[in-house]
Image (cartoon, rainbow, N blue to C red; front, side, top):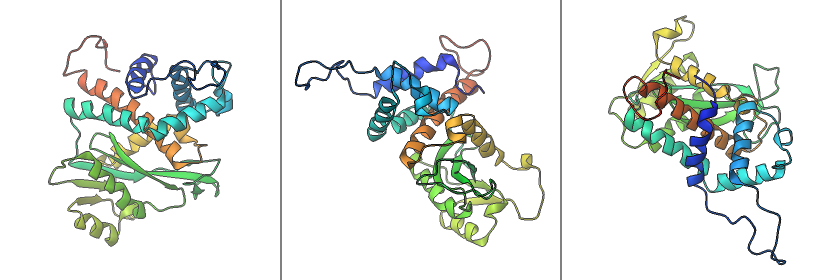
Length: 280
């Protein structure tokens, strides 16, 4: 699956811009009645997409059309308005309606990535010589659609992050009666089994010391989703220091994953104007 195809930029902007308030080109309260023209939201949005895809710094992506300070300020404004989270939810709803989330099979796992700048949720990475790292504990459905995440330092174990990660199920509305949670051997403990039992969930947990092909169970979906997310270099090597900024970039990446997965899954079952000639 392509990370960010060029044809997806305009549809993303059309939905994203619908969530933004209308602003005049010039500030109406300027004492002299004039001011420098406001930089277009579309220009800043394109810069944010480039940041997400290539992982470069704000100064490296800035140019004469948009300075780095404007990108940061507009990003923070959109975070305060909840635009990234709303856009993600809007993209998830049609996928659930047209294809359907596989909520009776859930997979949870953590993935360690680099965080050279440190920050609120960074910690010493045990797999990178103690350098600063980030561990998103992600949850996916049976196909690999991301359902939520918890951000923590790379030095945190997976099992203590299971409970707050499963709490993200409360945001999904009605759930199936029988839900199976697929976990790797890091979660193999009585504490994990008790936690799942208290929540009315079934656990399929790999046993420590026993080798089994990853294809034998369904937790490989979450591993693939981590690979999808890490293809966005802003997430694979995160320089953001604030958790809300990291979550915003994750939400934007998940939005792209939802749209591409919907097109890929619906290609063989639905017809629509502009349908691609082959599966993306």
